Each structure stands twice: as C-alpha cells, then as structure tokens.
Image (cartoon, protein in one colour):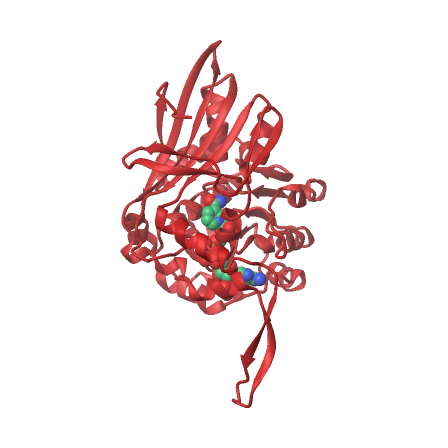
Length: 407
Ligand code: NDP
C-alpha cells in the first residue's frame, strides 16, 4: 500500500519499526534513517527483516533530508526523532511532496516551551501541496485525542470536563531514569503547570497541584497536574469544554532526585563553559556544554530499561458532560505491561504506548482513512478505525460509564 520513512532510532522508533514490519500488507517498503546509522541497522537486525533499508541523516538539516527523501520517495515520513526536528522535517516534506506524522510538538532548543503555533503555521502550505500532516500521534498526545474524539462521537452531545490521566506504575529498578528521552522529559516536567478553565489558561508552579487518583488494576497513585500539548488543540476543537487538565503520576523517589537535579543546576538548558582536557594530554581547552545535555549522557538510556521493567502503565481520559440532556461520566483507558512490551519489541511500555499509535496513524493515512490536505491533530480525523486498530495492535482499551471520576 505504501512506502514509509521512519526518522529516529530511539525507543519509540524501535517499537514503531517492529509494528510497521508486522503489517506488511500496509507498509510495503520501509526505511529507517537517523543520525547514527548503526542504531538503525541494529533495529533491522532485531526485527530480522533484511529488506528494511537504513540511512544516515541529520534531521536538523533540511538539505540532507530533502536529498534522502527525493531519493527514497516515501509516501509518508514518521518523525520519531526529537521535537527539535519537527520544523525541518515538515519543510523537507513540503519540498519533496511527502506526507508527515509525528508524536510531539515542536520545541526550540534554547527555550523549554512547547505549543502548536509553529507547526499549525504550515497548514496552508500543506493544503496547497495536497499533503497531509498528522501531529501528535503517540499516546499522549495521540490516543488521548482519539479517545476524546471517540467520546464526542459516540457518548456525549457536549463534553464539559476533560482530565487526561497518565500513570506509570512500573519499576525499572534504577535509582533514577526517565522513560523517554531524558532531555525532553526533564524539560517537560520542570516547566510550570497549566490547565484550561472557563476560556482561560491558568498557570501553576511546577507540580503545585496534586492528588491521589485510582488507576485500574494498580490502585491509588499521587498524580500531578502538568501542562501537556494536546490540551491546546482539544479545547480548540471541542469548544464546549469548560475545564481541561492533564495529570501524571510520579513516585516520591523520582521527585526527590528531580528536586536535587534542579537545585544543583543540572536541568539548565543554557550553556556553561568548562575546562576540558585536550586529547594529547597537554592541557585543557574551554568547552561549552548544556548541563541537561550532559546529564542525559550520564543517565540510564531509556531503551535499556525494558529487560527488568515490571508493572504497567495506565493512560486514559476521564470525561464528564451531557448526553440526551443528562449528565454522564466516561472513563476510557489502556493498561500496558512493560514486560509484554519488552518481549514483543525489546522496549519498555512507554516507548511501546507511543510507537504503536504512531504506526496506526501512518496506517490510517496509507489506507486513505486519515488523508486530507493540511496540518491536523488526531482528533480532526474519524476515531473509529484507529480505535479498532488499537485493539488489534497491542493497546486494547476499556470503558467505564457513570462511575466516580475522582476529579
Ligand atoms: P530517543 O532519545 O530514544 O530517540 C531519539 C532518536 O532521534 C535517536 O535515535 C536520535 O539519534 C535521533 N535524533 C536526534 N536528533 C537527530 C537529528 N538531528 N537527526 C537525526 N536523528 C536524530 O527518544 P524516544 O524514542 O524516547 O522519543 C522519540 C520522540 O517521541 C520524542 O519526540 C518524544 O518527545 C516523543 N514521545 C512522545 C510520546 C507521546 O505519547 N506522544 C511519549 C514519549 C515520547 P541518536 O541515536 O544518534 O541520538
């Protein structure tokens, strides 16, 4: 049905590549390209399909991307590198006539700030080129938006209160590790919190608002209000929403380490100058480093957490609103076992819950079900075929009606 180019060779790309390879009727040709080609080759080896091609590309360079894409000519590019590369990859897609999908919205390297405006600004150009761009197609953002669209389509006349709840109740037996790229993860959770209420965005101090929420098959876990990118598109697409919030669980040990990292300046994203030893041992030279990028090098690699990871994730949407004039509540969620994710793909549950929806989004496009010129968030498309695939591709979902949402 179509040719796919996966950019990136980290945890999420590894899972997506496994799932793409498991669906050969849809993905007829596959290429994985990243900064370090040996990582792409290692993914191909793990999958065991020598027909998958690999390449080296620096996705910060539009020129390199354009060269690769005009040679390979993919139908769709799955951007599973970092949010910093979103704009260069979108630009290269426009220049070469390729469709686009990603799992995280653009962030400039020098400011820890994420919002959709930069990517939404490409809308007209994608429309004019007749190309589709699907933004934020991981789990959250991603499935969280599809769940909301499904709820709006089937269970509510009016969604009024939306809470996205993300629990990782797994244990990787490390003192401190992040579940996806440490730099992106720490930038995200050390920012101020933010939620939407009655038409306004309300800012909170980082981790200021928290409460225990009960997760299916897991039990109560302290959950912290964070700002999360999908809230921005969801409140725009569902204007009846009075309040929208995002909650994520953190263990006490994780928060203690995070506190220390911040207090000693290791989460800084500005440059500091250090004296680095010269290779020939003759002295030192002044070198600029970003503390958070240095910290990333010393922390466990999220891709290596899978082997001893126990427990599961539970991510869902808790929604309150009106149906046929009556108030009702709805909770739709998935629980994903880290160990089962590892057995299938060699990666832990957080990479799995992101890589599987990314593959399904690309599948929706290639099947012609999610194909319309422009730049779109996932809730702009029909949720039904995506929801059906979640059940077939390893992320089954469950629904609970009219129970206490705790929120
Ligand atoms: P990793 O750090 O494991 O992988 C990132 C990959 O991108 C690496 O292979 C890296 O190459 C490659 N890369 C980085 N810079 C470049 C560049 N300039 N050119 C080419 N390749 C580059 O990250 P994850 O797999 O954990 O995360 C991938 C994406 O998924 C991120 O954007 C993250 O924010 C997003 N995400 C989304 C979630 C969701 O639910 N929506 C949840 C979790 C993650 P190298 O190996 O050489 O460093």
